[in-house]
Length: 181
Image 1 (cartoon, one colour):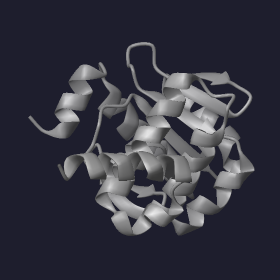
Image 2 (tube, helix red, strand yellow):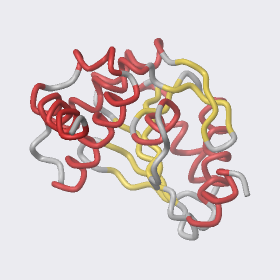
Image 3 (cartoon, one colour):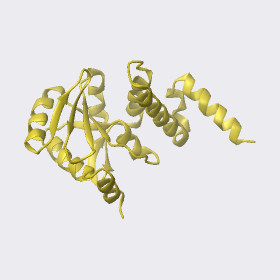
Image 4 (tube, helix red, strand yellow):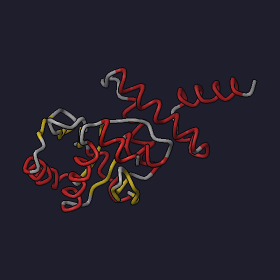
């Protein structure tokens, strides 16, 4: 079984929904993937049902309209617009925070769930994860997921540890010392 087939099965159609959303996003480019699925492109993947996306601000409304036409439901939140399909566990989360807009122009092409998509650069992903990890208003579980993503990146790309918060670096250094025994 391919990774896409596994994801399709465990998310009840999430890979298909992602493929359809990518087709819509590509028609309203530019955009890029951020968040956990994007991190999975760079490091050993872990399971996630969220596809975090940033689109050019002026294109978000037409993207929402096309997603609704394709059977997605839209919900608006303070910092995001979420799109889901009733039958699928996949949740598309569009950030509305302006600070993510520059990520689009630095995105790189890569493969995610069988689709060729623009993915935030590794440096931008780290910055976005640091912002999310530092946001005290987020749920504790989200905070820990962001922390884990940063640790996964730091383990795979030790040369980028300089971009990590001191608290996360301390955890990694403690773990490194413990593994030397």
